[in-house]
Structures are given as structure tokens and as C-alpha cells.
Image 1: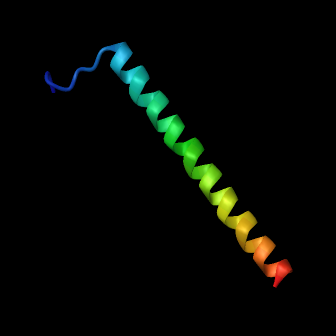
Image 2: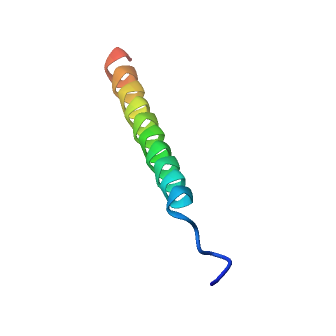
Amino acid sequence: MGLFKPTSGEKKDADSGMSLLKGLLVLAIIGIIAYLVVNHYAG
């Protein structure tokens, strides 16, 4: 466990990276849903 003892700075970077990934994932899901809805009504 001694090796895995991140400083607050490293932990903060990891958290910001995770939140960024979550944001991109949400945007991707919204984009896919919007694309499907548009195709459904356009078709």
C-alpha cells in the first residue's frame, strides 16, 4: 500500500480526468439519442 499513496495533487488530477471522461460520455450519449430521434422523425 505504500506505493499507492498519491499526493492530493495527483488525486485531484485523476478526479478531474474522470469528470472530463464522464462529461464526454454524457455528450456522446446525448448526441447518439438526438441522432436516432432525428433519423426516426426524418425517415
